[in-house]
Image (cartoon, rainbow, N blue to C red; front, side, top):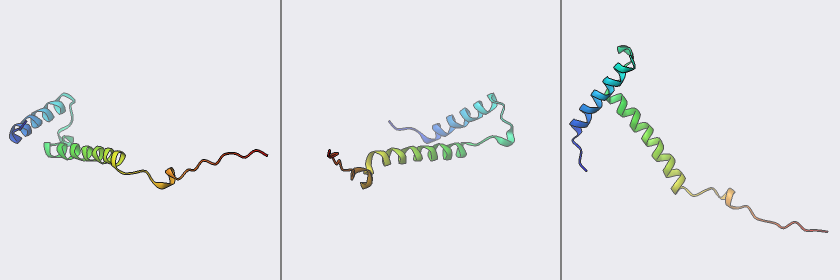
Length: 74
């Protein structure tokens, strides 16, 4: 599915402004669309990195080197 980036930005602007008005955020503390996109991409990149690390980086050898030694009885 292809999205028009101009429409996405316009919808994001309206959505951000609406929520900030509803929450009565002072105009000095409001964020713009660019800041919101930066925050979202940062969080998304952290999630992707965590998933990638979990799925594709093998565990260290210290965990796998555990050897079972039976207890000898006297």
